[in-house]
Image (cartoon, rainbow, N blue to C red; front, side):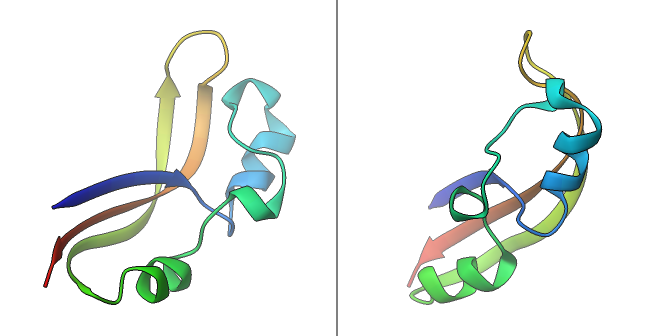
Length: 76
C-alpha cells in the first residue's frame, strides 16, 4: 500500500499567492497532477485518487486553504 498527499499543480499556486501562510512549494516542478499519479503509479491499483481543497492548520507555515491530491494505491 502507498498513501501520498501532495500539493496540486492545478490550484495550489493560486491559494498560496492569495495567502503565503498556506505553505507548500511555489514552483510547478514540485507540485503534482492527477495525470502524473496515474502515469507514475500505473502498476498500482488505484483505491483513491482525488484533488481536494483542504484547510491546513499545521503550525506557522501551513495555515489556510490549500489544494492537494490524495492517492491511495495497492501494488499489483
